Image 1 (tube, one colour):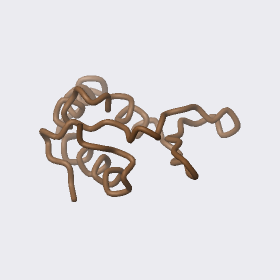
Image 2: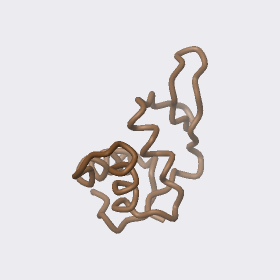
Image 3: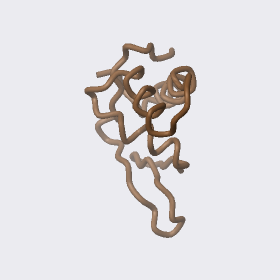
Length: 90
């Protein structure tokens, strides 16, 4: 299942963002696992606060990085995490 542009993503209640000092990289930690994040993935997940829609997150990133048409990419990224049950639709 994919998230829609109006979906409001938030991290699963047992997942959290952290910084792995050994790898010098942002990670998404959850029970019995971790996802290593690149800068883009971390930027997306930092905006998943349960108040912003996928579309709003994409617009913020478009302004921050001065680019266009990020909605499809942000939706695809968050949908993959949604399928793994690490993201919920608030």
